[in-house]
Length: 449
Image (tube, rainbow, N blue to C red; front, side):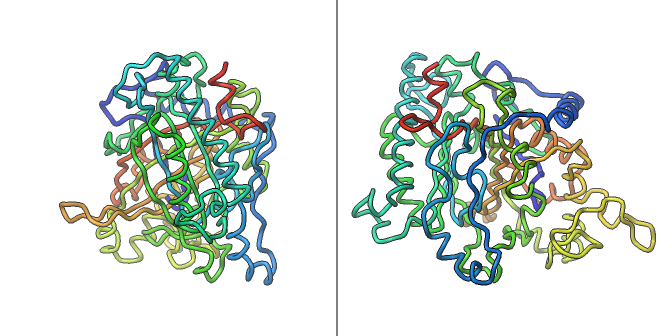
């Protein structure tokens, strides 16, 4: 998870029926063939303009002002053809609510009704139209102006951003199976899965991020109110990261609940690699997804008592990184390039054979990459006395088979040492169309096709 390329699958629990025309597992050989082919053609893929990234704090003055800057409006554009929605690239806010929702009458999703495909399509369009308009107002005017009398009254916008996506079950319910991209195929089961139905799937994705938890919660309440009885919540996770105000270095990569610096090996900001990794090319799928992205969401419970019961040396060997600094073992600095060939004085690999970063490395996955935006969650203790806390892992990519699936399959089959201390309990895959055109709504090109 420190590399984030640790796969976290989305889809249905093992043994549960799969939905849509692309159901069924994918062989590792087939996946690696697709990854290899992608590596050959990726540089030539045409891409839309990416989301505007948050300002960088490169000077002492900028660093000092960073917490205040991050309490201002969101940095992503409100609209624009071919642009990613907010909440995908740029500086992740400190708090995020991630919800999966089902249409109330969806015959193909989690709904209990028997509405027709046309009715499901119209209901989804109404929800996405309402969310798009509400998100634009929240971003442009701030929650205090849009929600007078709400808990967020008197608070700054706190970089509030809203992201919406569509699940495969929604396309099935709306009679749009033929428009389902190959990249949206149900993910295969992994041998390390411990998936629970209550944390899997969903017709719609709603992600609301902000630098303040009250602002985020108020925005979620408003957006769900706009959707009304058309949807019901399937599952929801409230995630958090360390805040900019608490960090000695606001630009440093944050740690997760295991104490790992999480997300070190992401593609560099503002790089062409980041665009190729995350954004769907115009020739890579249906027109309604051109400029968008796919996200795999995994709810991963961490066995924190077991983890912190190990000595620090063992924990470092499991990850393959120095815990205090985040540097790959045998190297200096968290940003140092991972050297999988390095050996110690006795000829042993500096990074152990089953270390997480070795097995998650692009070098061991035919160059497979993704953009990880993980959040911690902590729901206290379960009835059996075990801690219910861990990582809400979100992997953004142009094609999950070329990114998340290939890496996760390797981590499961090759025996990632981190598997002993984690349980993958929730999984979902969503297509996230590009930002809406002015006057339009997210997903309009699909739902009105």
